[in-house]
Image 1: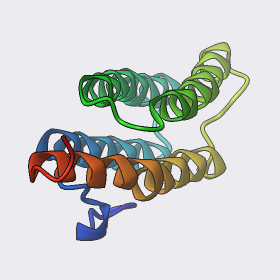
Image 2: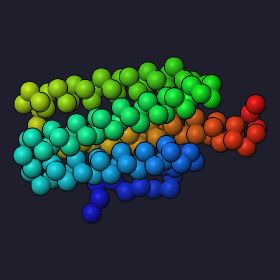
Image 3: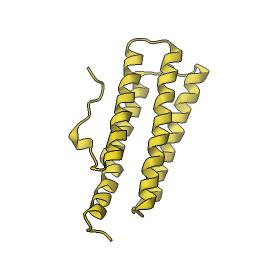
Length: 138
């Protein structure tokens, strides 16, 4: 059973971003499974690194699309990403130092942030980009 299942309500209507969001959810499910199975610290750290690497790739893609389309709220969106980048960097650093055993609380935080971000600001810019695509915004 998956920790998080993709729901159509998560879709923002931009294929490249929706595909990346699906991949992020898949990686979070892998992270949850590693934790649930009591996998060795090295494998949990590796799963968290994979999540971090893909998240940074996704943020860059998203920010590039927002810049290219002069999306309103770009700076605020980037700031949300930066705050999360910092938090996940702290998780990763603490895990590598052995100060953080990846708890379900940490995984829940990652899940909640991801879903809330998708349903919040990502949905907003998705609507804006779809309006551009439909020619409603010039």
